[in-house]
Image (cartoon, rainbow, N blue to C red; front, side, top):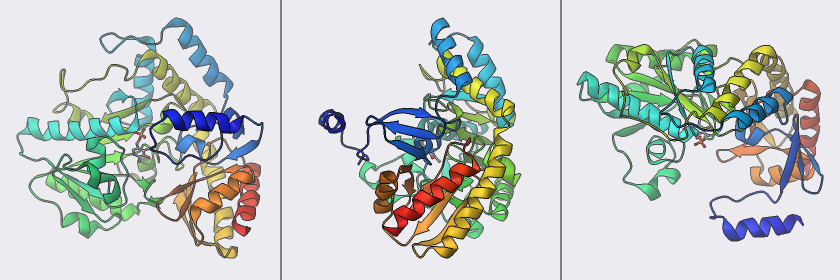
Length: 394
Ligand SMILES: *Cc1c(COP(=O)(O)O)cnc(C)c1O
């Protein structure tokens, strides 16, 4: 049975992924089940997306209700869900204006366009971006252009141009790249795909000052580290360093494809205007009903506080593991966005973990990435550690 679906999929899909040989069928809380009924504890959450886990009753109800009334309108009209979601997201993000997209890469695309338009309106002649090595911002041409990984960029060159790469957490390396043409600096407060590297507070503060001194916009990519994952609603709030523009996606819809970019009024006033940017699906009633309900549930269930508690517990258990296990050399991360640097091929450990009923993924070359649903319990953290120890021992 299982192999049949895999075979069918492989015959029809473009081969851009080396998928795990598992056909998933349903989810419940922090657990997933494959078509043979095998149960997995999920520490991947569909790559940091399914924060509320699977089958949250209020979330499901909100989506079903919206399907029954209206799925899509285009952005030529208003709808109740878009009004509600935009307001709630703007509050949560402490930004002034929001634009909904269908994905993270489009949120980055919009953020880059917003920065270029701002410079254009100001007549400053600025167009350069400074991005970071080991960053990941998505797969569209603009997002790839600012992604600090040559392997992702080279086959698609020439990209948008005017992009330079600095070392993350090295303020001098950023300063060295600033010119009178620098329009924006883009970075993830906690780098995800690149290997789970949290920014140092002094670095973010230094970059903010550098931007203020040189009229450069600061863009934060909160697509993975945002939405409660690092113990504050958005990671920057934990650092106290506010961006001018921020990109969001992944967990804001809990599985419905939606992203957003947001900005301060200062930027918005001189940036994208009618005719400059648009999307057919972006922020339709269906996805906005999801965003509004997710934000509502975050409040009602104190998800951020829960992440602080269970995140601290996870961090302790991982520190212990890093100390006592010969195959783990380091732990890095913040809250429920954690990475373990392994001294064993990560891919092999992941497959072994799956055999033991634990779903984990990788980040960068040798890092095991742990980004569970935010609703996980301490008991589930213990369950993960037990399974991971077995996988590491084999
Ligand atoms: C996943 C991710 C993206 C890209 O989002 P998509 O929805 O896959 O386009 C961009 N930036 C970061 C930090 C991400 O983790």
